[in-house]
Image: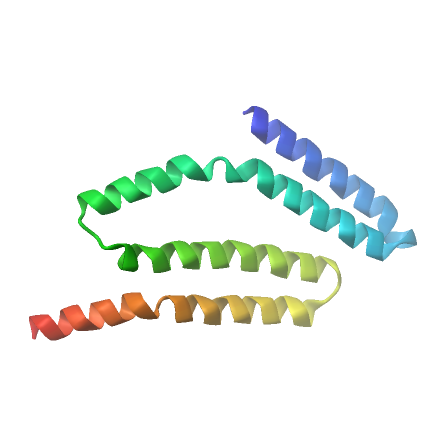
Length: 128
C-alpha cells in the first residue's frame, strides 16, 4: 500500500508539473514525463521477484522447458514496454511514432514467439 501511495504521489506531481511546463517548455515537459516513468517503474520492479519465482515454480511442476516459458515472458515485457513507449510518443504529439511503436512491439512479440510456435508444431507432428 505504501508503494501505491508513493507511485501515485510521483505520478500526480509529475502530471501537474508537466501541465504547467507544457506551454512554456514542451521539451522539458517530455523529459519530466520520462523521468517520472523511470522512477515509477523502478518502484515496481521489486514486485516482480515473487511473480517470477512463482512462475518458475509452476513451470517446474508442470515440467515445462525454459524455452517454452521464455517467449511468454519476453512478450509480456515487450507488451509493457511498447505500451509505455506508445503512450509517451502520443503524449508528445507524435501519433505516427506511437503507432509505429505498437506495430514494432507486435512484430517483435511474434518473432520472440517463434520457438514456442516451433515447439507446438513439433508436438503436432509427433502426434500425427
